[in-house]
Length: 321
Figure 1: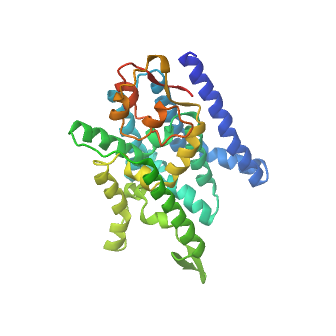
Figure 2: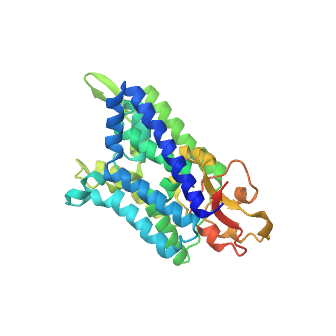
Figure 3: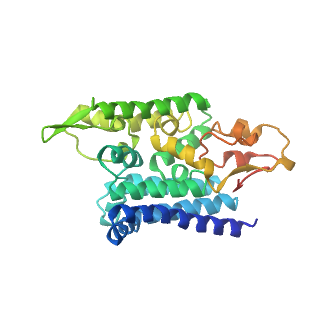
């Protein structure tokens, strides 16, 4: 299948998938008004640019043009737009704040209700994940982008990183989710509003997205709690590939399940493969062993391009599964 047809399939599938949450929003809102509200949020520059960056990344991946010279600017752009821009005193960037963050869009929606911005955030994430290999987590998410840039820097500096054991990291990630459910259900972590206990999301204490929110904090302790998860993510990213994504992020857990059904992914062309193992050794993630086995379920693949670009026989590519 030609690249043009593949991209066309992705676009058609993508718009179809986006129609699903829109229809759901219309039903939940009782009609036309709710759908317009959802669309109004979806059409904000932040979400539009997210979709554009996702499809630009997909096009570059499918056409084998995602080299490091292009990869770095794309990651820097996502970091700037969704992590830094909203903190600048420039009006045009005021709406680019990563709020609600992907974690808040999931966790706080469960606690406080599925408000429209949360629904739109989740719709964009799921849409991009269903179209391509973790297009949101790999190319749009500012926390993911920073971790990817640090991984590239670590490689340049010759810092050897340890490769994750997926069963272990997934167990930790699931453990965080179960802890959130338990603490939320019991309201052990809570605040009091109008004389009633209101549960607080336990993810607030490990949310690296807060590191992009520059704001005056009430106390030194609040400041530490606010920025510590992000700072720890930056430090550990030099030694481990995407530590926040693999160990903490509930969105990473969700998109790992959703990406199994994605239209595009890293695929192996069996006739040309020599089983040299170079791609498996070079890849920073634990997904390659399962990709080479054509396993039905794979660990998180962030479409980092390392395995595809370093394959001597050019047997790996981004294509239809």
